[in-house]
Length: 363
Ligand code: GDP
Picture 1 (cartoon, rainbow, N blue to C red):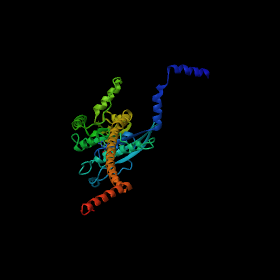
Picture 2 (cartoon, protein in one colour; picture 1 turned 30 degrees about the vertical axis):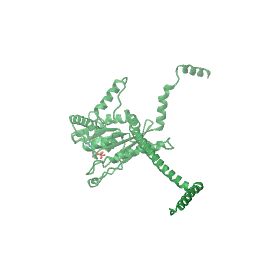
Picture 3 (cartoon, helix red, strand yellow; picture 1 turned 180 degrees about the vertical axis):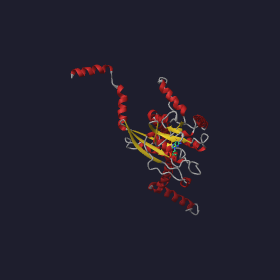
Picture 4 (cartoon, rainbow, N blue to C red; picture 1 turned 90 degrees about the vertical axis):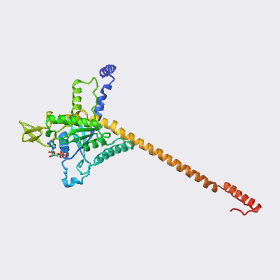
């Protein structure tokens, strides 16, 4: 026993123990579990639900109702949210998918992004309320951490609706643009469309999610991976809900008369790159940017508005108070017996003087 203690003491001379801090943080976070909210936006039929199912290998849309053309004419955007608990190697993730059916479906789509904008704000507002409340311990984070914005492969770059929508949202959420149904384009077309979309985003001042810059001492492989991510924007994606079999292998893919497309094949699409980014490498950064930039902006704006309202209210009360105070002083003067007596004396003296001068009293 004493030998064990002395060996521990020997160890302690060189080792204080704070090197275990990351492990402690890790253990605590794993125990608490993680939460992530992903929003998908873009015209209906671009493969949003299929991609989400492919990304997380679950069926998040099992009770989905697809509207017919007649219903879509009058359709306004409504927000749906599906939440699933996923566990992998003992790590629990509460994944929420926020979908925006009806977006871009109506005849007049002016401001159809308003619902989306309001939804994001409402989540910030709820968080702000919870954070300012009494029970801050068990706050559920429903803030939207990332918005996958689907761009049609059939147009010539961005549509006006895409530009307006992304511009309305870019200060509130991390936008990650994706080029949908990439299997309908040739590799040259994909390259050209990506370039055009990037140029247009710059031209219209759309601020999408920026991958963090690498530290100079980061390893080469990591730097290359980060550069590849930056160069791949918008990610050209393919989704599939089914498993296909080809050359003795089973995989998630799309079967065509001329061949098969494999969702996870980097030669066919950027699907794997996107999934790695969303799940393996940048999930925490997306949450950090949401908290430190987007939510902080909202919070600062809220506090500013509240301060302005308090100042206005104080001014209003001050004016009201001064008014009431003067009024009170006037009424009080009449109520005070001493003042009343003096006033009555003054009036009587005036009447007396006027009578002596032979005038008619003016009462
Ligand atoms: P959403 O309305 O945007 O959610 O679109 P869905 O996921 O419901 O997909 C609409 C249609 O497009 C379905 O018939 C899908 O099978 C098909 N689809 C989905 N992803 C892809 C894709 O990557 N490529 C192609 N060619 N079709 C796809």
